[in-house]
Image (cartoon, rainbow, N blue to C red; front, side, top):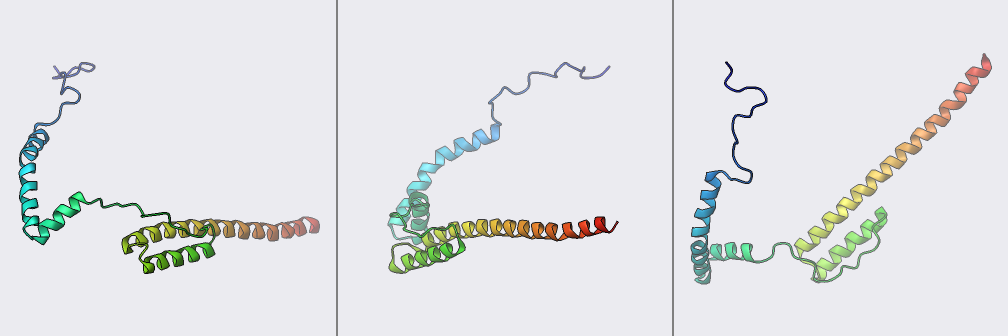
Length: 148
């Protein structure tokens, strides 16, 4: 006789939403020690430990900041506009209006736009070449038919 019969589940199993014991235990352990670790690192940072200060700042200072104000860029719908926009970003960084990290973030967005424009242009050029090829092939077929 089979241990489990078809159509009959072996048991109720674990209730929905019930977590494994190990993650629950680690969460409890972390809650107990986290406050003390923060106190120690904060005290060391205040005492001049630059590594501890870097840890505290990295955790407390917002890493993703918004630009301080609107960035006036030319239209980026063409490759010429992208060149002008990139030049504007470099100029804003040189003036101190943007930090190097902010300028790199904006340049990354501009690079994505450049790739999108490039992909669109390639697709358009391929379509045009295929249409030209189809036009060249049609007259040749018409000549063969008229020869018959």
